[in-house]
Image 1 (cartoon, one colour):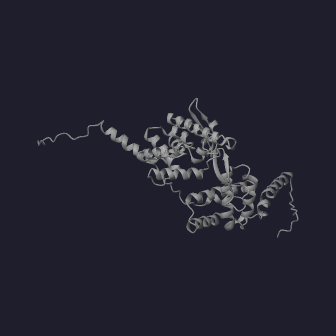
Image 2 (image 1 turned 180 degrees about the vertical axis):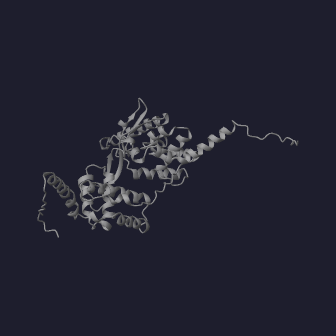
Image 3 (image 1 turned 60 degrees about the vertical axis):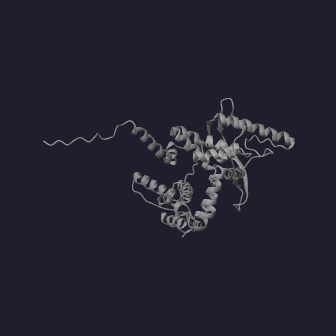
Length: 372
C-alpha cells in the first residue's frame, strides 16, 4: 500500500567490502525499481504529455496533427485508461486486430499508428516509466503496395493539348516534365527559378492543414508553407526548354493580372497564383486538373499520376535509377526501384528481345540419320 511516506531500509555488514556491495545494490534498487513500480500514469496521460512536451515544437505541423489525431481518435478511446506500466504486447495486438477487422483501417494506417505509439513509448522507456516497449512485439498486417496510375503516351499527349485551354494548364505540363508533388508545385516561388542556369529549386511546399490549436479538429484549417517532407525532397531539377518558355509566358500573364488590378493585386512571390495574386491551394488545382482530364476525355486520374507518369517516361527512356531517385526526392534508390518495378519488367522484355537478334538459334536443316 502506498502511503506517500519514505521507507527506510537497513542492512548489516561484517566487513567494509560487504558494506560497499550492499550500498551499491540498494542504490540500484532505489534508482531503478521504485520509479517503475510507483508510476501510475495512464497511457492517455502519457500520450498527451508526450505530444505537448516532445512533439509539438519539433515536428512539422502536418506530422504533428497526424500524431494528435492518432492519439485523440484511436489510442485514448481504447487504451487511454490503462496504466502505462500495464500495457502489454497482447493488449496492443488485440487493439490493432480490432482496428483492422472491425474498423477496416488499412495496413498502412495501422503501421502509422504503431510507429507513432512506438516513439511515445520509447520516450517513456528512456525516462524509466516502463521497462520495455510493447509496441515492438506486435505483428502488423503486411503493407499493400499502392496501385500506381500512369498515363499512356497517347493519353499524355491528349492531356497536354487539352491543358492549353485552361489558366493553370502550365502546372500540369510542369508536373509531367519534373515529377513534382502537388504541394511542391503550388509552393514554388519565382525566386526558386533560375533562368540563367535553367534550374528549378524545390525549397518549400504549400498545403492546407489542420491548425495546431484546433480542439474540435476536422474543421479548422489553414494554408501553410513549410519545408518539404524530407531533406531529400529539397532538390534541384533541370528545366527543359518547353518548360522555360511556359514559365516565361506565365510570368507575362501574371504581369497582366497585376496591371489590371493595380494596388488590389497581391504580390505573393508565388508562381501559381489566382488573378488577384493570391496562392492557388491544392484543392483548386485539383479541380482544374479534373476539368483538363474531362476535356481530354480521360479517366479521373489523381494528380499524383502525373508524377508517376514522369517517372515512368524517364525510365522508359533509360534514365538510371539513382538520377531518377534524386529528381523525385526519394529517400533511397531502393524505394524508387520498388515503386517502379513494373517499368523495369517491361524494360527487361525489351532488352531481351533486342538480344534475340544477336544469336542464330534456328535449328539446322534436317540431316539424314546415319546408322552404323
